[in-house]
Amino acid sequence: MEFIKVTPNYAPHIALIELNRPKELNALNLQLMGELRDALKALDQEDEVRVIVITGNERAFAAGADIKQMAGKGTIDMWKVDQFSTWDQINKTRKPIIAAVSGFALGGGCELAMSCDMIVASETAQFGQPEIKIGVMPGAGGTQRLTRAIGKAKAMELVLTGRFIKAEEALSYGLINQIVPVELYLEESIKLAKEIASMSPIATQMAKEAVKRSFETHLDEGLHFERKNFYMLFAAEDQKEGMNAFVEKRKPEFKGK
Ligand code: DAK
Image (cartoon, rainbow, N blue to C red; front, side, top):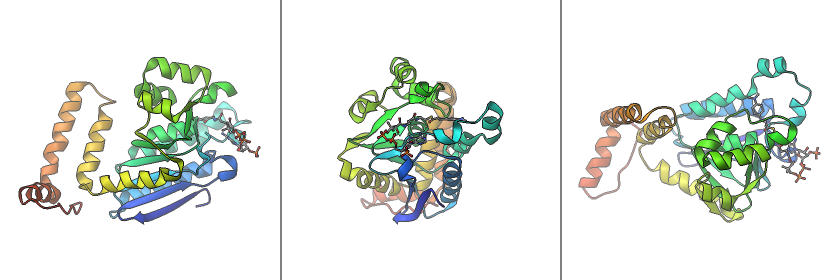
């Protein structure tokens, strides 16, 4: 891995992926996206890992797709490479993913953060979809996920003007989960990850799946899906452990079985 650093056991049950092209503000080139896809796929199959945290560095989570790599490309080149189909792997990942964002999360970088399940932002984080300023438009979910997250009026404004918003504004629109001091953004993300990792991993993955389904279906179908996952959890030892622990007034020990 050249452009990402993967630590599968950063903390018990928590894997950390660090985007690592600091000079280019973690611009997402083809190789980086390929590495990210492979890492997520591997971590999703690793039983020990329950939660994945993706981060950049203090200055940039990611400043977007690599403009230098895209600049000379034609339609067919883009279509053939279809770099962002690698993002399907992010969407397919069953384990909860937290984006720990500091600095720039722009274009594809903002789309990457929004593809994660939760965003913990430092007070210096900035979000935006500035593609319009370079003559294109968002292509990896920006028009869809941003609109679902913050509503049409603000999404339209950000997509059509390309302006950046600061963490405070992003929080007020419901784009992110929390703002923390810059020196704590990774620590706080890991703290959140630990809280989630202490639950049954089967339950967290099924719950994640059901919440995501709410974006893709109408209410009846979503409720049906939710109920099915709820019933399925009664096949797991973790359900017995969780409920017995409650009755016995002790802390549950979830095994992911
Ligand atoms: N690509 C390549 N290099 C980048 C980059 C990027 N997105 N962002 C920054 N860099 C590089 C800069 O060129 C510079 O490199 P050197 O000149 O030193 O070699 C270095 O990182 C530091 O950047 P700056 O010198 O510009 O630093 P500043 O602090 O002055 O400015 C900035 C920071 C983030 C405001 C600025 O760098 C900036 O505006 N960056 C571009 C942001 C942007 O426009 N992002 C959107 C990119 S387009 C697709 C789906 C989606 C997409 C594409 C295809 N398909 C489905 C096929 C997504 C497209 C995008 O994300």
